[in-house]
Image (cartoon, rainbow, N blue to C red; front, side, top):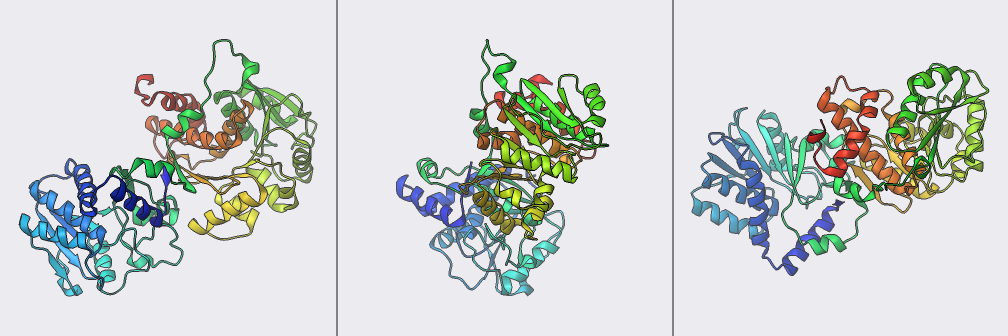
Length: 509
């Protein structure tokens, strides 16, 4: 699914009005009706609803929703927040329709008119939408503060009022609605992908309001949201006469004394993701632990007893993953350098491989094109020396991928995959239960496996990230956010594949 900027969404709206054709008021009625249909089955008939509308088209959407809820029998109050801007034509049209339906809105020209709202009531926030270009001020700002203090359940229309759709680094969070739930039109908003905006967006979902499909298809976007429908076509089909040689040989360079588990998780994930053969190159001290835990994997013992000190012959391998549990010993750093200098196979680098590169930035310059890096934000900041967050961190991620011609997977709640040409893919799967040691080791093995099977690096990164998160989601159904461990993610990779192939997993439980 494409993620468009607020300016691009306005262009798509205009194209829909021009090409469908539909009037602006007709499109507003459609959006409000679909929003109402999403709400009506979840709100009990006696629930008191307070709709706060601004003077623009987001406010007009709110008026449509208020009228439809009132006609359905819900007790509804409507408050029009004066912001100093003129009322749009569609707003005025829907204000008249609301009056004819039997609701007289209350205009909030000063904060003394703010109503008393009980904690068991619902607030629908439709004050500002995607067109907001500066922080709310005056009466609107104070209304937003009082909405947040009300304790009521807050549902934002399209985007929480005060939240910019892209970059909020200069925004005033004191005057942003903190939504319990956001129901957004047609596309996720880029701002929803960033941790700093979680308190504002709340639990969000996308509803399809029927914007022109041809325009959406043809219009390019730098940002995408990874869904099952986009991943399924990437997955290779297996044929009857395929054999283990068909599916590649993955090399995992991982582990040190006391860190055999990282190597085991990574190699196990490579096997569960479908590699025909998996070999772990690891110190002698980790060999027995890995062979006991993972008899399906082969082991290439390093001469070093405590850490990796030599690079194995790469000839037998189709792809390599390096970094889990490696440590940053100078001998190990030399192994990574030789790997980058000599390899002709696809690479995925994680954890200590990235930490070694952060200590020796020259290694970035010799990194083969389309190498996949999978840092968490702390590791990425070590690479860049930056302390940026959210949108600015994404900008640095994009610049880094372009500069070093690599694929940079920045792990998080919506793990993002930045391609060398500037495209970014945000993941839709995963949950807080995956915030546990070893989860990243599993991802490294999964991506290395896909690379060994012949997937293009971009496809391996996108599919690997999605399947990894989905395996975590399946694990959550069985366990809880507190109890999921990396081994649970590993053991549910197969179920994640099945769910991706077949839509529903319930038949396989």
